[in-house]
Image (cartoon, rainbow, N blue to C red):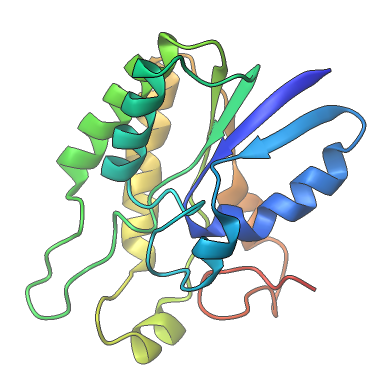
Length: 186
């Protein structure tokens, strides 16, 4: 049976159970460990929450040095933590240029491991709800679009298949989120 391994930011914690159920009997599903820890605070990357592209890069570097990932496909997304914006300074957690460099390095690291990389585009965020409820950092839809565009270009240049979770999610309709970006689990 084929195996997939998921590394993603907090949205993957919520789409993961659906994906696992859908693939049951067809593909063996596993993910970055620590789901209970990740669910304590989805805005704080820990455990299964892969966090920003710098954190994913560090995780994959460690995996690469310790024997890789035992899977046929590696489904990967990051971006929502990268676009966290300091409301006082306007500084991004991971500026776009650094994000691009991190994605290039992620591709290089995964190319030395067994699984084939599949990129998952970052989902939309409801900036009005998020920015009203989250004083520590803001997110903006325009940043999601800009970071997705950069990732699209890098993935295309490197022949990496892309799952367009952004467009899929944008077309699902209202009442999708339990907050500003995370899916309802029921």
